[in-house]
Amino acid sequence: MTDIQETLDVFEETREAEMAAPDAKNEKPEVAEFSQQGYLHLKENQLSAAEDCFKKILAMEPQNNYALVGMGDAARKRSDFAAAMEFYNMCLEYHPGNNYALFGLADCYKAFKNYPQAIKIWEHYLSHDDKNITVLTRIADAYRKVKNLDKSQSIYQQVLAMEGDNPYALIGLGHLHYDFKEYEKALSYWERMISRHSADQVDIRVLTSVGNCHRKLKNYASGIDIFRFALEIVPDNFYALFGMADCYRGMNMHEEALEYWNRILSRDPANRVILTRAGEEYRALGRFDEALGMYEKALNIEFDAYAVMGIALINKEKGKYAEALSSLEALQRSDFRNKRLYSEIADCYVKLGQEKKAEEVLASAPRQGFRAAAGYGERFRRGPH
Image 1 (cartoon, rainbow, N blue to C red):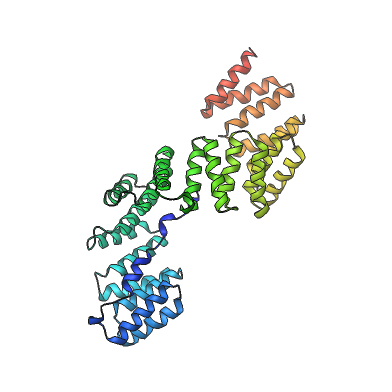
Image 2: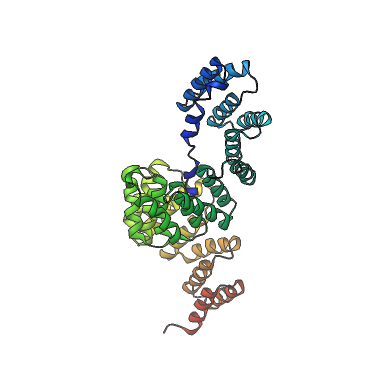
């Protein structure tokens, strides 16, 4: 899941709104005015205008916490995380307990994928505000990224105890269980999320994640329903198109699968993975020339074992066993763990009348621990029933 998607990265606008109105009793009138203007510009994503206001404050008060955090937030919104960290750290040097600087600094570490340091800072933040749900969900998400299932799950559940259907916690728990291949549990949290909202208001990434759970569980019909709905919302969404194609593929509905692979290729004609998938569908339909065209396009981009395998299987279908064998044995030398290669190679030798050689190939498979291939060899030696 392409990591489906950083659904929990939504930054709370309320944080900026709260900071947009500093306490006038503690600020000079002109400083308070520039601060309010700066945060309004920041909220409206007018970053240059916001920075102008904050720079005017810093010219008057170099240690002003609102201006330093505002400059950090503007840099963070530009994705200039290194610059943002400088401003947040400067603020913390003068104002060690500033929650907003801590929050922004942790988000920067998260952007750099330094999750342990982000966790450390967020936990320090919680020492000042241990009921902050936004921070709790961010910590839980960071623990998920470092594969700490128990800690992440515990914090998400803590959030749900505070706010029964918190969407970030439900989404995060879904991702957490999906990452650990616990698809039914992931599905339960994401469907709970959807049930609390109108489906067309749910993030498209949640919908495609639900579809992917059904796909992984081989509930292909249910997956198709979800992916089709996602495509009604975002007609060219890659994950929904991929999910539709792969579900139809799982149901051996090759014409239907091909329609969606080709829809992806119409937008991304050099996608090597999708070219080989389309080639598989053409091959399954007996449209060998079109399949070969797809495989060759994939190989023109980069070596692809699936494309080589597909071409070899087409050669087998056409009775070109020697050509197929040459390709399959070349693949086997670089991918000796692929159990299918043993049976395909053995079958080529059988077709060429070299039964002894076929037995030798199959006999080599158990040494790699492939029971399936060993069973195939035993059936070959016994002959058909």
